Image (cartoon, rainbow, N blue to C red):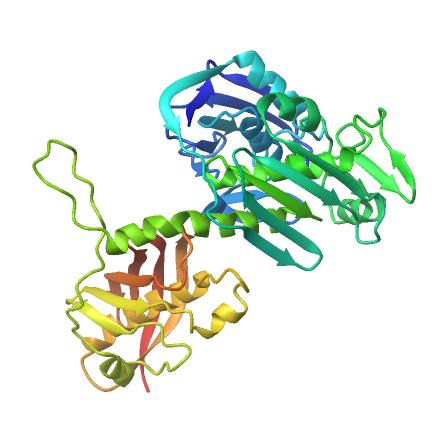
Length: 449
């Protein structure tokens, strides 16, 4: 088992942002063990941070974007690849813009500043994840499969939609191999795609200084190709960066055909689902911790007791919703300003057929709907007269933190914050095994039928 690593001192780099074209200053700071990698926006009030975790991925169109609320950081994959390739597990990446510098379109310059800063071993262990069975994703022409192995190895085939420049490369990923064989590979694009981006006022900082452009059969670049198969190696560079969003090193052989950022991140979600299965099983079925042996107690989250205050039948007398849009199964606690409700998430939910095939995840908007329904029930239960309907008006500060999957018990907790006439505002959270998976502030109106 490896030890965790961070930097010996801060590493600095400045350059232009790919999308904005503006100058960006980046500082990568050492961080304590178990911090992971975080992006910190020093240009914003409060210097908000975003963890480099797949749960925070919000966009994957041509690059990987992380978001937390209204804060986002674009095109993080090349910096993440440099950190992961050199096995830097804990770092704070400070930025004074919404994207790192694009540098030369590869991870080469980032590797240089990390190596100059020095990499320091920390006493805490770094536990890698080794799949217990193959993980597979097939989307369109993209195929990705991860097999158990003792170390990380990537085998990749890349090609464009017309089958041009088909390339293949395979290698184990160690810091030495990463730096020599993958980190120098530059991003590339086809002229017709880049022309479209430029016309739409995107990639203002893009140039032949930081990308290779392919036009028909010609390769346009300010220097010769750094590798004869530079395109597939850059695809593998992106994979290394996107895989780091798992939050743990991987012991496995990944075989990828026509990968993309969208497929990479969806694949990481599949890996995370397998990784979290043993933890969920332990939480649900593990025995209570032993006491009196001098060791620190370990808390095992329990599903709340099912002291049902309101049954499904009683709920349907108040709510107009019916299958498949009734998102509350029962009420377990009901006070004047608070409510706790339960939604049992089963594989039979109809939305799992398309969200997503082979990797079922409850849509975040339905978790928001569950909060709104619970809030409506809270108000309607104490409505003064007549049968009422709760009309959902607005949602603010919405955050989706973790995926909700079949077998989860969604606990919905809502607290009424403000009322004015028929207008009500409430705070709501959804939890699984005691951990918040989503939250929002909702506003709704009560009206008679």
